[in-house]
Image (cartoon, rainbow, N blue to C red; front, side):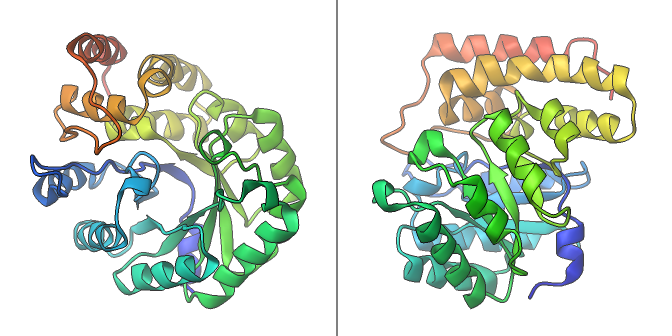
Length: 304
């Protein structure tokens, strides 16, 4: 089992790091390092590699492990690294998760298996996650993203899994607030629920969410952290003002254009994004200009 402080640290904003690629389509390690170095000290709860924004389905297992190594070498020893290790096979998920732990990750993020989606009911998902959790020396986070997988884990299954000592929490990215609230009502406080959707974040926090995994934190890290800190401090007027700046970053960038837009926004903000890996296509010049305008407007007159 991972040290107790790992679970206690699980609250706040987590960026699902993008994976920059070079001209040959390989991981651009220098760009990845440079992005991470700029995030040090900002106030993230953790960093996440090989998530959806990191193009995990397009990465090989060894690439996920290398990203884990790189992240571990840059973030402080007291900071958390989370690695996406969910695969279709329970056995292969365990194998990759164990390797990720050997490469320095603190927690693994395990997406719901989806290929045999008609069979991925509550009992199947409970069995899958329990087998993975029982095989690991570090905790796991369940990852629910039904808009990509077509699988929505039943609330009752989440409630059952929340009692497992090695299942630390859930990243729920559907943006379905009633569903998220139903989960929060059924799980113990120590089970950390993170919203993967910016649009419902204020309501999710009010309902008891521990924080959020936000693609926008890649290109607007200070703004995302400032919002969370203002909310936690009870500075409600400031929190509302900051959230009003954040919301267009979801509607006009991430939700409108997807992962390629996050990378384009990073370039506009002075980070390293680059092009996505195929079959994803890079954005055209018009979309990039629109993203740059949205990003500039969110920062206008802002002093953090």
